Image 1 (cartoon, rainbow, N blue to C red):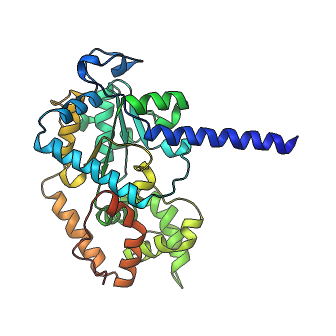
Image 2 (image 1 turned 30 degrees about the vertical axis):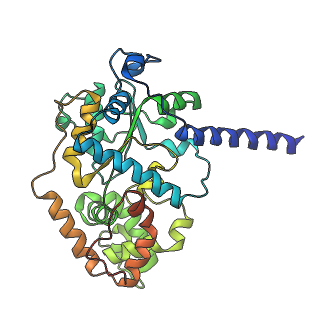
Image 3 (image 1 turned 135 degrees about the horizontal axis):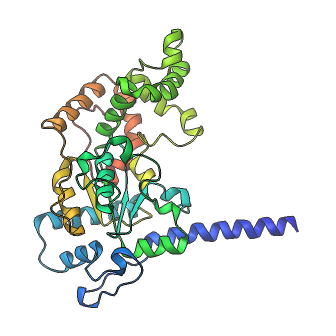
Length: 340
């Protein structure tokens, strides 16, 4: 009896996972605008065209240069997935935790930390009426507060299915090593990262330094970039569980080969890509918060300086670890690396 019960539970869990896996690959509910019918709430129940329908209409007519860029990114992602993901494990509900939902506008946004996610959360809060109309007026800690924006993981499989079929799904990514350098600087090097330093920095010091000082063991405040990378490459780190989201690979957070994304935005073209998404939403007047002048160039330079001191052996190993993000999102190998 116990064995039969276990088998039924295992089968039910497998069916749920299989359902979620199929949801991402299910055909989109795209029709010409004249045939579009309302189903459900929010954008699904409105008379205006949804963002997904707007994108469909753009694809059917003469495309702007920016719309063509995004079509090419979708195609590149699909082709890369077909080459590199022969076997796919079943999706679990927790795999949808990073996909935020805006039912009012028919949006699904998968957030990748250190890839403009704070400002995108601010924008979604402003759009949904959960914060001031100006996203810049929303403090960062409020944008990241748990529960401010619902996650796709909060819904039943049937509700997940409905949203995946009819909502516009988008994500924003960043050149992987530049994102990694930004995570190190923000969470392990800067003074405001004290909580991360105590949690992760102290662990890195304890594991990797032969004779650590007591204050470094307690505070974890002086972790070097090379130590941080060695911690990521240490097999014990992966055995202990997934990476922290700030340095986890984008594909492991958003599962772009299992969930279909309609827009792949990039931090490197943030202003144009954000305007493209907001245009599809029907909110072109909403200003996406812009980074300070020169911030992009400064971030590139910092990443180059940090990786310049890392040996080619460790650069190659790290590229192997993050290589899927480079391939799926069509990033070139940074010129400062010495992989050969």
